[in-house]
Each structure stands twice: as C-alpha cells, then as structure tokens.
Length: 350
Image 1 (cartoon, rainbow, N blue to C red):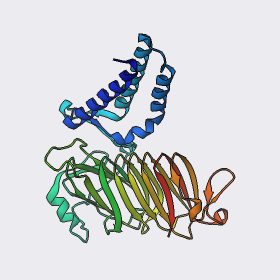
Image 2 (image 1 turned 30 degrees about the vertical axis):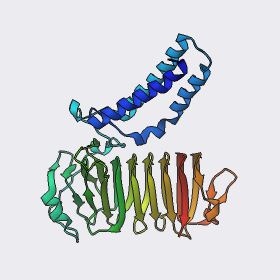
Image 3 (image 1 turned 30 degrees about the horizontal axis):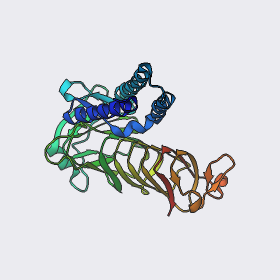
Image 4 (image 1 turned 90 degrees about the vertical axis):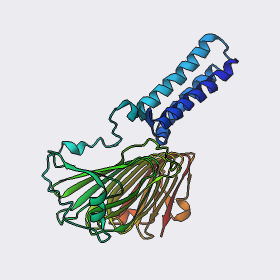
C-alpha cells in the first residue's frame, strides 16, 4: 500500500468503528461537539503536510500516531461508554454545581395544573418523582413535565442539554415551566430546585443511543412554555439540534447557546438594562431577531461564516464590533457575542 493512502484509510476505519459502536450502544458519542476541536484537525493536516514527501517507515508511524492520538483525545473528551457497559453518564455542561447548594424546597408538583391539563399528563406518564436531601426534585416522564409557579420565583435558570432534538418555545404558561415531549429514541430527564427566589430547572436527554424500533429516522421533540413573570437565564448545550425560541414575551437576562451542526432561530423582546446573548456553533444556521428600536452591540469572532450586520443597520466600530445607532446613550441594551466556524450568523430587526 502506498504511504499516501495510509492516513485516509486509518481515518475511515476509525470513523467507521465509532459509528458502529455508537449505533450498537457500546459508546455514546455526540458528533455535534467536534467543531470545538477544529484546531486538532489543523494539527493532523499539518503533520501530514510536513511528511508528505517523506516515504520512510518512521514518517508513516508518526502520521498514524498523530491520527490515533487525535482519535483517542476526541473519544475521551466527547465520548462515553454506553449502557451495555453499565456506566452512568452525565451530559450536563454545567456539571450541576447547584447540587452543592443547600436549599429548602417544598414540592407542590401535584397541587397545581396548567391550563392544558399538564398536571394530569405528568401524573399519568411519570416514571419517577423523587426529592433528595438537598431539595432537588427529579422527574422522569414519557412526555410531560411541569413546575408550579409561586410568587416568590423572581429569577429562574433553565438549562437544556440534549442531542438530536427539535426544541421549540413560543408560549407562556401560568406554571413556572411546562414541557411536552415527543420521544422516538431515548428519553428526557428533568430535575429542579430553588435557592430562595431563584429557581433552577435542568432538562436533558437521558439516553442518546438509537433505539432500532423503526422510528430511528425521527428526532425527539420538546416544546417548552415559560412563565413571563421571572427574569430568565437560559443555557442551551446541544449537538445536531433544531432550536426555535420566541422569547419576545419573556424577560431575558442571559441566553447562552452552545451547539454543533444545528439550526438556531431566536427572537428576543425588549431588553432589560443589560441582556446578553452568547452563541457558539459549528456549521450551523444562526438567526437572531431583535426589536427594531433596541440598542444592540455585536462582537463577532467567526471563521468562514457569513453575516449580515451592516445590511440591517449596524455600524462597524473601530475595534471591529458592530453597534446600532445611538447605542452608547441607550438605557437598555442587548449584547450579542458570536463565535463559530462556517455556517451563517444573521441578525434581524423586526
């Protein structure tokens, strides 16, 4: 075999093994996170260029070793043993540091209901509803989740962590939080707790392994509703997902989206004194809509990505950022930070 065919062959074998083991459930791997490691691919490509005209066995060994190192690094960073090995795996990108907080939480989950029978659905479909010593309420359900609203909920944090799903949010509820799900493979986990007037809600994909039941071509779906009274922080960590969030009816303090090859469509309402939006994505389509009169500043660190900032009225500043006219004098402002490779990052003013 010619030495210039060794590396492509090794890469094909390794990728094929990952896909096979992922499908069989021996490992659990989310491809959407690969874009985080794009410098690693530059290193592999650079090493191969350095030794491109070297035919010695040592050069071939070095090139294969670099590819194997990159492969093991990626699997170690973004892969995990699947359920066949009976290992517990937690994908939450915040590592749930809130679990270390002491709080007193009364679980009123069965005492309230949404206008659309969310309480009755949750009761009938719930597999597990438990409260630990820290006041953390964990719920496992087939298709619905909710948290009742109380007037002491001044701020709320929603953390979403999942794989190939379609996530939508466009409506309000008299509950604090409602989720309706459609599950074709894997299930969702949900748990919540509060620290005084701050409520923390965690929603994640429980099992990312494909269930070969004839429906694996369908993605899971989750539709959220939020209460408009609290000030919200929303953190989203997804892979190859579709996200359509209309947040125009809510008070959003911060929105952070971290995703891979995904489609993100987000609509914001009037900003608070300071509303921050941070989006990091790979080869994705990113659309952010803001009110026409809202003061906004965009800091963009994108590579090979298309943008439309100047086309919609933003002016480029001396430091390379983009601002709407009169930004410095505005009382309430939106700060947008964009970071990604390829894809598109578009901001619209409605």
